[in-house]
Image (cartoon, rainbow, N blue to C red; front, side, top):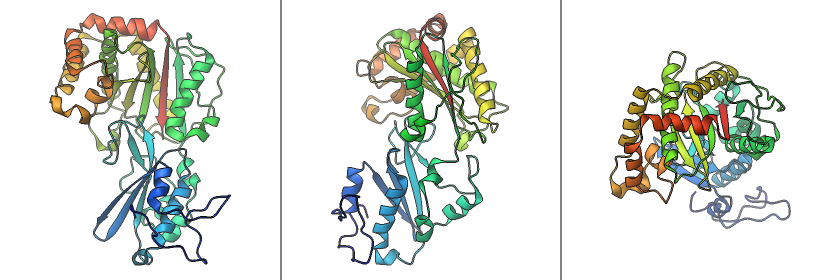
Length: 389
């Protein structure tokens, strides 16, 4: 399949494999089509069961891609009468950082859309969807619509600001996050939840979106910090945000559940943007099984507490040790680092491992709280709380 099927022309009485509105033509092979569409394909065959994972950008039409793939597979005679399972995966990008997928690089995560009834970490989809997906046939797949993958999973975004940002800037920050999760078409809805917060007040001129359903265990906090990555304070803030990520999990321990069966709960990382001053802090958290509004409210309260009071010395020492350990890797493996060591500080070409280690080692307890005071409370910052269900 990867090398291109069908190899022969499609018979006249069959639908053309690749057809556009302007002209009906058969592309050389499926591989060419997927390359042009920036897709990737992974195959696995075990116990006479063929599993195909199809990765495509959110801007592409999932139904169209699946239809073309299935039409190609239908031309393979040995598969015509067989049932096989297909896992359709969409590239969620770096915001879905809580998942670790064998098909993804350290900065990209794939979200599987094939649910197993006995292993659902998300809000259970309708029974009809489950029955279709658990044992997929060619006829089942032909009935799929993009609505199956794009609708029915409400998404909440809360924007926090200290009122030093223009409304347009907040809108752009929210739209970027919205696009990462749902694709450009979903940005037409206004992803704002207006609120009041002691330390991060937002002008109440945004339209609320409908929040339905329960949280699925995945949440993200994105903080845009106007701070040059080459500034040592950037490392101090990274330590502080790491403390917030782990502290949030421990403080909500009774009401949180572990997503994906993992045990680490919440973690945090600083990410560099396109420019040195365009830095983001991401906190990925396991939410409870409450509603999105309840979970985002709890996360908001913790964020205000963190900004107001900073961190304790005990939390500081623990986080400092953790970050040093996460960076304690062999020098010949820098290209394959994942987690804090790679996604946090290694993405700046102007910093090397020795500089990073020296910065962390020399950071004092007061440095972290000063960074929180200066850059999270008193300077311009955009904070995004999102719940993906």
